[in-house]
Length: 116
Image (cartoon, rainbow, N blue to C red):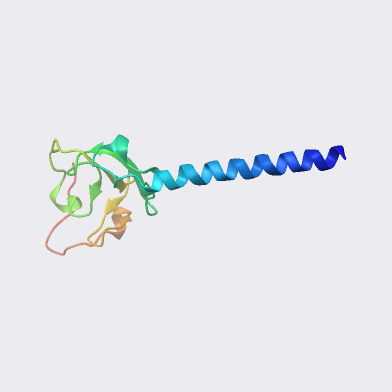
């Protein structure tokens, strides 16, 4: 008799918890779309592709390396503020939008790589 009562109480507690979690999740989904402010972004939109890392408020010109910079050299940083997935340190964004190692960047026979 005691185990049946305990089982029923545990079952009711589990169901009540699931109902509460479901209600919170549904209200979360009804929120307005994410804004451009980093602190208001939805956490599940922060998934990045391999070789990328999610960063908040980074300059669009120097938040990550780009393949063309191997030829032209680094650009000065702009004062804008982007929150998105950027290439991890040591990787370069290619023309197709993927983060690759420098040796996978396309090369041009007319330019020599930039060296600092």
